[in-house]
Image (cartoon, rainbow, N blue to C red; front, side, top):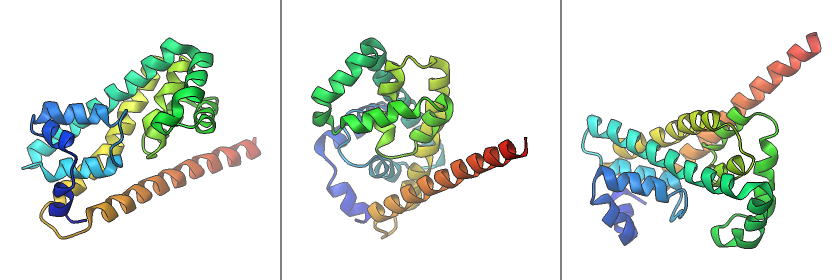
Length: 209
């Protein structure tokens, strides 16, 4: 789907919010954490298409990152208010309405037993995980500053490449959906390689002791 085709298929609500400039873009970034109308990388590339120059691109990156963090903090607050048992019960009962299955939620909660910062950071650059990761983080009452720092960095690392891609390809004939998909695959693959390298290094150090 090329840039002109993509803009023709944008939901009306998205078009309306985009008409409000940076304020609307921030609202879209928050809403994306709750109502994923389409993959976040498509939304971010679409926003990149509308950026007129480099200065506006920097502002858009800052606004979308802030919006993504606010959306994550909302999920964190919901989890914090519910606590572990009630949050899990809510997911079991209502999760199907937001495409959040209980085994997936349990997997996210279990991941936090390893490393709070790195799990949060890594989760922000995995498409399905990044939306709901903050819910178990809040339910388990993880340290807020650690969560906020990791979420902010992770959102910046996720949003920036796709906004820049949209900006760079706004006048091209490339299929933006395909470009975005493979860019997401590349980011997740790179993340996996880094995680494996860190684990391998720790394992070798442990054997040497």
